[in-house]
Length: 292
Length: 193
Image 1 (spheres, rainbow over the protein chains, first blue to last red):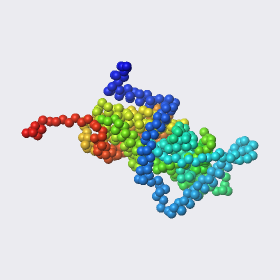
Image 2 (image 1 turned 45 degrees about the vertical axis):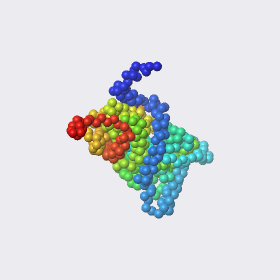
Image 3 (image 1 turned 90 degrees about the horizontal axis):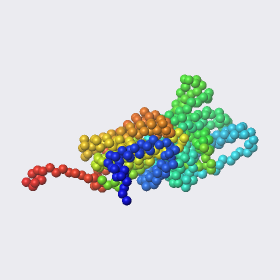
Image 4 (image 1 turned 135 degrees about the vertical axis):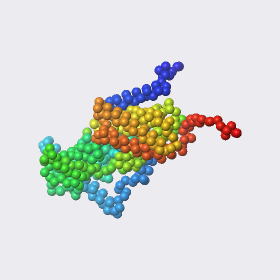
């Protein structure tokens, strides 16, 4: 059988131009045409690369260990601080949860008993790859559907720091983590660094909807008469990212400025707590049903 | 040239960039191994396959870097780096007769030019996509201008990383089986006189 003529003529520069034309068409295809097959192709490619990326991650940890490894204090002190942070998160989580339930009660008028939070499964996943061309890009994790990972699951670091959410295209053995600074908006509450006052309502602390700035920080306009000061902690108060992550820390207020157009509002800038470039693993909180 | 060696080198470089790469970052100045591998092959492989070599590496780079869309979904777009690398390859192929290949600085300069041109095509194509299609640009929430500046710094980083990488790759030259045409000039020594 003879090769078709158009294939025989596809050599040299003609072949290069044809490949370039195909690449241009692919680059200009809408997401709906690419999504069904490019993700699978990428996962297929990542299989032979996995041993090398694991080796690279090990080397990275040796050359530039995660910041926690440099903690000069006694291990007991560091452990105690971690536990305090963990319990503080649980406390804030329960307060925000109470506030959410109170809102639900008011709207439904007929809920007599507290609805139990759905079971949350915690899965530890290692970071196997990151975007080499930018800071805090999408991360590839070595846990997928077979491990119980579901789209929309929140990723936590150091027990109580919100790092991002799992992207919808979860593979069998791998998944992608959309970092928090790539999320279009995050609802938070600004709480003093020492924690909230139990005598005050959770709703009395200012809420802020964080928008990414492009410099790796977030900004939010907060309309409140309460005092805003650098050092305040932004804690997640957004049901979209799962109830398990409610109350987790996201960032710290680094500056507070007045807004000329709105005298009652102030603009805060928030610096993320976690640097995704130094992450080697995350804990995924997968609820039985992830809110979308 | 052995394609198998090239493919293994490209995969290794892409995997190292995705895992170990962040160690080489100083602020926004981020160097990568992949451009150096492509430039190493471009400087010695036959000109007629140069663009295809670069396109293959671009495809690997595209497949390993998803973009986050407005809908909070990730998308792999095969194409922008393929075309970017092809453009960079065209420049390096034109430049290579002017370069003294044994000089490591020449290789670093070629890598800088390669990365810069591929960045131009990459930013242009993703700008087109974000204007006319789904709106997902890899630099969001940053701006396109910021991305150009970041890519310029990235090209400098690639040039710096190319210095040791090209030296190391030079040591593996016999494995690549590049065809070499040595011109023998007639003379007394050659004639045994």
